[in-house]
Length: 173
Image (cartoon, rainbow, N blue to C red; front, side, top):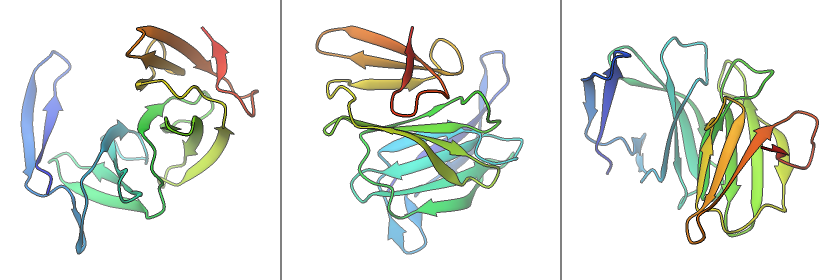
């Protein structure tokens, strides 16, 4: 149900095709339409991994990508939820990618840390986030920042993630 191509970059702006996946959405006997495809470092693998999430079914999975572009499933999340935005962020005290989840309709956000086995642990949850952000981008200005953009007004806010705020996003930049 989902065609995908995995490319390798050379650091000079060139890319080369590693592998095509005719049905990236199939896991076992179920098929998913991925609404979110997010790259990150979720394990000790030297290659990047992928977090794939299906907002409609509330299912997500983390895969390692090997040097040939094959996907190796590491972990499934059958009760992922219906997050409208998913992005990776850098958490200052963690060598693996953090995951930021945002539900635009409810104004709820969560930040999860990741260990070397792709296990996600809730670090922060906030229920007072604005409900009008149309774009959420992790690591925009520096590794531990998050950019929030509101398309109808053109307003943009940039936050620095901090560990000392239990219920808030962090410092506004």
